[in-house]
Amino acid sequence: MGRPSVEVKKKPFQVMLDPRYIDHFKEVALKKKIQPQELARMALTAFVPDPFNAPVVSIDVIQNLLANGRK
Image (tube, rainbow, N blue to C red; front, side, top):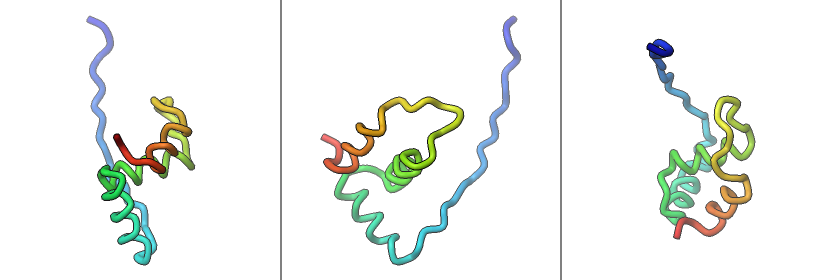
């Protein structure tokens, strides 16, 4: 028995980025060896905490990833 399953529908979400920054954003993601979407997600989470999910890592860890890239 238990709870009935819940259907989750994801809606696309886009953030308008000033075109002058798009190339820079992609270059940073490439240098950090992460996907641009992951970089955007980390940056957005750093400013606007997710109200539905507690952060898995602290903001310090995210900033360290952004500063040093993945090992």
